[in-house]
Image 1 (cartoon, rainbow, N blue to C red):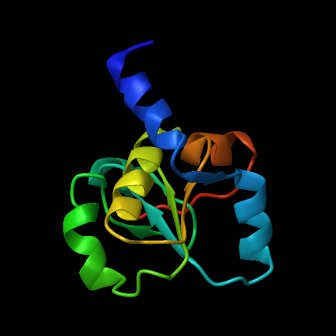
Image 2 (cartoon, helix red, strand yellow):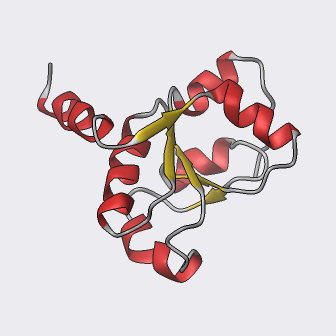
Length: 120
């Protein structure tokens, strides 16, 4: 296991993860939560989950308080495969956010599940 993978596994032990199927179900039901893409801006530009907002892993800690000041709001983070979103979820929890999830499998799993992406 690489040091990066070890770091991600440590973060996963402290955070909550959710599935692509669960997020799709919740979106179809019209449930309200913040869906944030933490990938690089160039990845975001190539395609994203409909309704998502962008706040890259490199800036989320700096920008989250302005975008979502209420630390109790529900936030679901995703990236390409679930690694960066796990690290970002861990960071947000350390900043006091209490209802943060990482979407396991990321946008890759979303795409493999045959779900729609929007281009931008």
